[in-house]
Length: 301
Image (cartoon, rainbow, N blue to C red; front, side):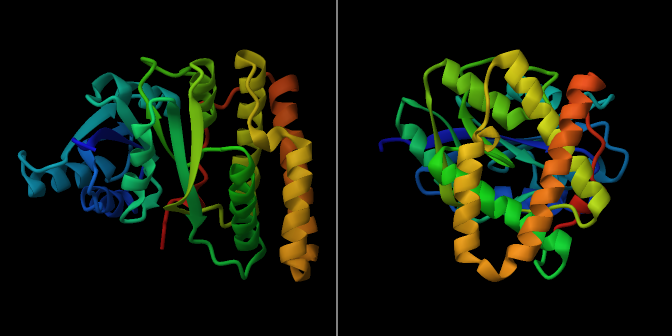
């Protein structure tokens, strides 16, 4: 490769004072050999905490000539994650873009691993493997670990991208009323006949809900968003395929037979959340593109 692959990173933030500094430090100290991070653009969606102050202080301490350049864009009104992504896309200067949620932290080599595959011109998007920091010794901790483990199994069968997504800039924006931004980007790549690739060794640390209320709130919103995507853009993610779900559940049972009691409880919870998502979408006609935040997901201890 004659010259490094250049990318821009958009950090989408809403009240991320507990994690934003750690995230910016992780992004600006990535181990890079064949990839160049041109810029890190933080989009602050009407943050009411110290997020903006922390970002501005980080920028000031690094200096204007630091590479990669870190900038802050602010939205006076919270208009949803998709709207914030569109603002990032408007200002980004690279052809390869990465969207990272403000409540995640990438491993030191994650960006290199996500971007290198774009040497293939037929590739449209890549996604890493989210690994939650939740401890599995509680029911909610087990549920979070299980769902992301199942996500990993699904993505190995058919790429399913989440938490951090790298993509080729073949569009000017994504649907502003999407509550499932990664899935919307997947749909756009398919329309452009570009491939998706799951990068299982590109690790992204995140935090799942710690309590039942936040768990249900998050899962029903995601199901609602997927139903919206199916109706409006005729695109269905692999997690909506019952055959694939059965296959990965059988693999999970085979690998962890002693956890079957807890597995059944989580399956029942997921069925409930999907029913609530159906209810929200078809009965309440709801589209939660600017969703109520699950507060317990914000501290990656």
